[in-house]
Image (cartoon, rainbow, N blue to C red; front, side, top):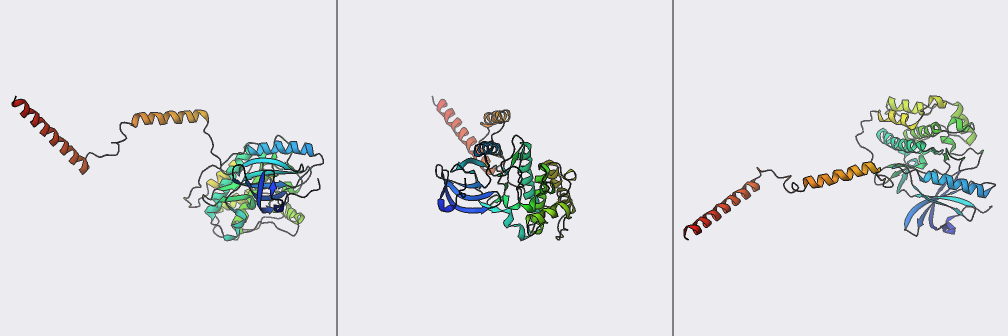
Length: 351
């Protein structure tokens, strides 16, 4: 149990071939890897956390991983697989996103409409996760990814998540998460809830607008003290709508009771902000989602009826009878029929 987590030099985690290390944090190390069975690029997170009772921890880990794997949503990074390395280190195998984390873009003075679009996508992800009883607990800019082709925002790394049906994926009694994004109640050792995730997203909003989180310090304790006691710094940008500033202030209320109570409330306020942006986010799901059976059946019936009703009209449906080519064709047809009639009359008359 004293063995260090796998490194790229070892080249393999489970059946997955390691390509490179992507990053590391307080909860684990993330690698880029390949699944040789289907030649798919994946991201693997090896968790640091362990337990004095490895068997109990492994069972709890599997239960949490199964819950996270149910989070199929267009704005959530998909969990493909999970396992254990050398009977010591548990790992999660996730969708590899071709794109940049938001943390690489926050210093580039992101336009307000773009920030709002990103936040809307992540709120939809949190709304879905919370509806299934899953708290993320580590919402931050480096866990938000923007797909290169679609710029679809995806929330990743549910590696320290909590679910309503079990205890937690990580060691009991330990405050986990990134200090700059922790809600005040979490800093004080209280049990997090959906409002804690929304506070963390409020920190992401401030960071996306200003380039840095509002509370930083030399050590985690000093940062935690600021979350609990210091007021939110004023925004320096002058192009932020008052409505968006109000969203920020409510999301970052120190008292959870004064905060947004759920993602739906916060999303409604974001949707009402007049950003002047007409660009809509693409809605391509990370995994194709089947239609509910009654909806799919009605859609199939409608398509069949359309095919039956439009079969005889498909060729002529787009033709105008006043088109010159149509008039020429009709004239030729009339002349041909007239000639045939004359030939037939003459033939009958000579008999």
